[in-house]
Length: 403
Image 1 (cartoon, rainbow, N blue to C red):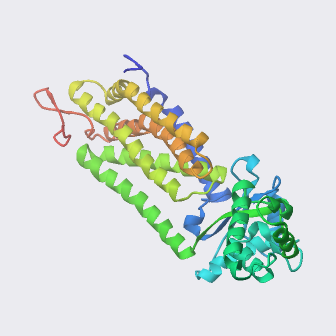
Image 2: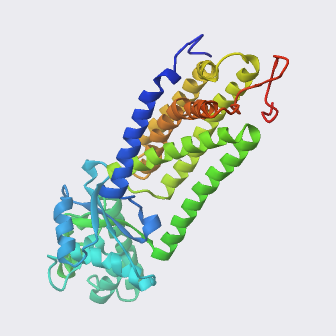
Image 3: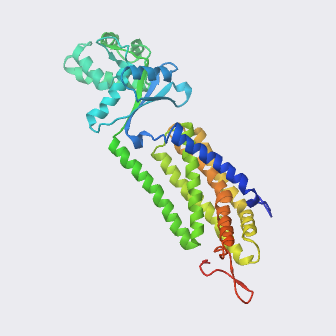
C-alpha cells in the first residue's frame, strides 16, 4: 500500500520553518523546567506517600490543600484525579525518613488532617479496616454471640467493608446504610463508636527517598546508555555524522516530550520513562530508514547535490513513514483517550513522542546531515557524506560508507 506516489516536496527548503517550530517548543519546555514547574518527578523518583481519596461530593482541591497546611503538611500537593464524576483527588506528601514507621506516619498525617472535624472519641467508618471493625464488635458484642463471636463478627466486618467499597464506592453517607448487610443491633452499636466522614482512602502508594533516588539515577543512565549505543551503532553502520545527527534528533524529541510534561505540570513516573525509552528506539528507526535511502541514492545519483539527494530520499520514504507513524499514533491516541488515569502519563508521552519523532526524522536529522556537508565545503574539505571523485573524472563511493 502506498499513500503518496512521485511526491516532490522541498523539505530542505522549509528547514528554517522547521527550526523555528523546534526552537519554540524546545525553549518553552526549557523555560518551564528552569523557571516555572521544574521537572515534575513522580513519587517513584522523589520518594513519598500518595493517597488516593474519594469524596462523597465534588472535592475542592484548594480547600483540601488549606486543611493540610493547617495540619502542618506544607509540602503536600493536591490534584484532581480521574473523571470528575468519580470525585477523587490525589494527595502527595514528600517523605524524608526511610523507616517503615515514618512512611506509615505520612499516610496517617494526611488522613488525620482531612478528619480535622471528627467527633471526639469516635472512629471513621469510611477509613476503618475490617480488623478495626472486628475488634470493636468483639469488645461490644452487640449480638451476645458468646463462643461464636469471633466467627460471626469476622463475617459481619468483612460484609461491611465489602458493601462500603464495592457497593458504595468506598464512601458511606450514613451508618444507617449498613442495615442492608448487618443486624440492627450491630448498626446501633457502630453508631456509638463510629462516624462517617465525607471521604474514603481508596489506595496508598509509598516509596522511600533512597529507592526514589536510585530509580532516578537508573532512569538517567538507561536514557544515556541508549543514546550512546545508538551513536556507536550508526557511526559503525554509516558514518559518525549520521550517528551524531540521530542522537541530536532523539535528544530534541526527548526534550520536547519532557518539556510538555513540565508545561502541563504532569508528573514523570517510571512508566513515562519506559515510554521515552520506547520513543528513542522508535524515532531512531524512522531516522535510519531515511538515512539508509540517502546512502543508497548517494551511490546512484553521484552527480547531484546532497541536498537534492536528501529531498528525493525523504519523498521516497514518505509513504512508508506516514503509514507506520499514522497507525502507531492512532493506537496510542486510543490508549490516551480510553486508557484511564493510570496510563495517562505513559500514553501521553507516546502521543507526543510519535508526532515529534516522525517530524524530526524528516525535519531535523536530514538537515543536520546537509548542514554539516555545507560546513565542510566552506572549509575546503571533502564532504564525508558524498562520493569521492577520482582523478580520472569518475565517481566512486567513499570507502568508509558501508553497503
